[in-house]
Image (cartoon, rainbow over all chains, first blue to last red; front, top):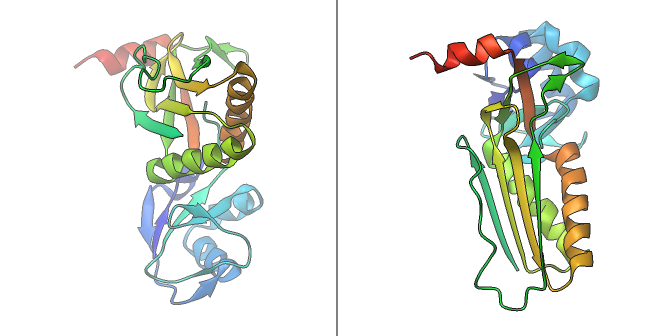
Length: 78
Length: 137
């Protein structure tokens, strides 16, 4: 699974993307893996939305290793 | 209905209104410009970043959703990313409609939704010195 980080999350993880082997996971399972890899992400979990293959997904979403998942912190365009 | 969306590193030029749409009665334009201060501090530029494929897709989805309630004929959005000096446009939106009411409404609603949902971020503010250093080859 390709994971993308943006804005201040890149500063936390010190990378713009990473590969994560998860198999099939739900959002909770994905977050556990993410926080295990980058503990600094934990405090942003409440404000970060997940996008799967360029679309926002809800808390009941499921993810597989072929997905591209982006962590979307609060946006500030315009 | 025609929608044009562009993310670009280049300055926003003076886009022309859609000439092919003959029944246009209103052509409304908006430019969001980089202010000279951020959090009370003077700045020289802002750096924007985007999750480009999703940002373009999300802008199109939002416009298609709003246009059902505000039937307009043409929408053009240009959002600049990268370093944008103070006074230059970070975003340009042009909306054409038969009448001004739906064109104004679409523009306002789109900008509100953009600021909630479109994955574009102000990454950092640059001082004058930082901006000058970027220009040095």
